[in-house]
Image 1 (cartoon, one colour):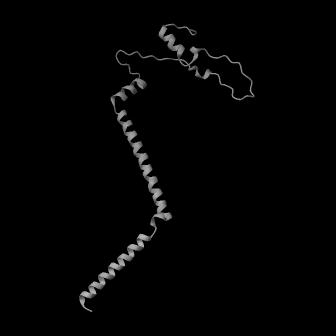
Image 2: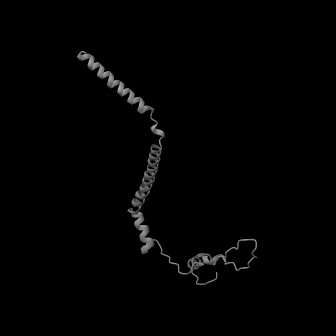
Image 3: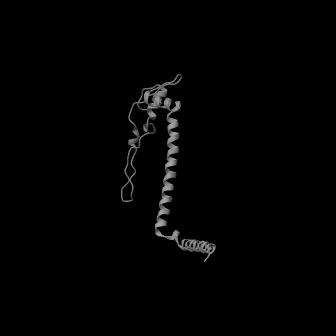
Amino acid sequence: MTRPMQTVGRVVAVLAFTLVMALLVAETPLASTPAVEKAKSRIDWHKAQIEIVRTENRYLSELLMYHKSPQFTTAAAKRYLGLVEPGETRVIIHGSNHADLLPVENVGSSTAAVESDHPKVLDFGFVREWLNYLTGSKEEDV
């Protein structure tokens, strides 16, 4: 054979081999194998986790910016250190919280109704203390 014929034969053989390999790869159902499905589900899970972390990161960044702000510093000083700005009055209320005196309702049809003394309106929270402070009286029952 002549030299150009050998070259053409080799080129045809390489093209045929490439075509056969392409057909084999194209016919292989790679998308339906269990390993590929498992990998895709893990990828989706990781993408969801990344989005959750990004959302949390944005929230924490905003919280950090607020904690660095002068408004937060002033609010924390008022709450924890007793800061009073000009024109403000600090009020400290001493006493117990009467919320634990609320009656507990009996649930169930087999129990009999229980008579109880209901607390007065002024016994809830610090209502009585506030009323005494604002009116200037020192009475216990208003």
